[in-house]
Length: 262
Ligand SMILES: NC(=O)c1ccc[n+]([C@@H]2O[C@H](COP(=O)([O-])OP(=O)(O)OC[C@H]3O[C@@H](n4cnc5c(N)ncnc54)[C@H](O)[C@@H]3O)[C@@H](O)[C@H]2O)c1
Image (cartoon, rainbow, N blue to C red; front, side):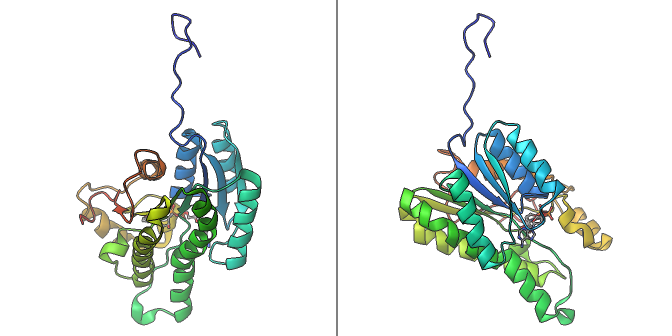
């Protein structure tokens, strides 16, 4: 690229150039938007999802178009063996993981009195245990290199609670507590750990929620609208970036339409 005078124009290097990031739940919604934003900023990427197929392939293709190395990986991040294999593959193909985005999540709706223990356990496994499993798998290399950014996608419902969503709210509150403890454990080693707690974002995740739930929630939002995945992704870029993200650790950032004002 040249300027009008024929002098090479300055092309801004991406703020994540030279970094390698692993994003879980990257085949859809917020994870896909974060993956694309990271690729645009020059990060090498491992994009993991438990649903491989055309959606994940499409995101891998879109990210690769930015000229960065991208691999797609099939992994259920609630399963310990899958996580072990995922990190082994990612590090063998891309090198050490600098940035981990724990984004994979599920959402079901049920009042506590009607909830089976299996439904509760499944939520905790996917939305909380996975954050522990993936963080633990990422840490040895981050500790060895003295640098790491762990970004956990919680939810504003982990801060305020949601009716019919006690299991989800508990898992997400757990993510926030886990992140604060981890931030204290590894801060001296050059590793930060933060949460993003989005408000309602238009993705397939909320597809099964009742219209009544959705209408009531929207009416109560100061911005009177749900967000889009690409409006969350820049917060994940900030937390991964140097120097922009350097001083955040143990924090919960809230792109949430004003739903929660901590
Ligand atoms: N959409 C919202 O309103 C909203 C609000 C706050 C927080 N969040 C959180 O954001 C994250 C992303 O949600 P989204 O709205 O983009 O949902 P989504 O359903 O669009 O995407 C979630 C992705 O995670 C994958 N996934 C689910 N379980 C998995 C597992 N065990 N292993 C690997 N991959 C798995 C799914 O296959 C899917 O591709 C979730 O953690 C969710 O709780 C979403």
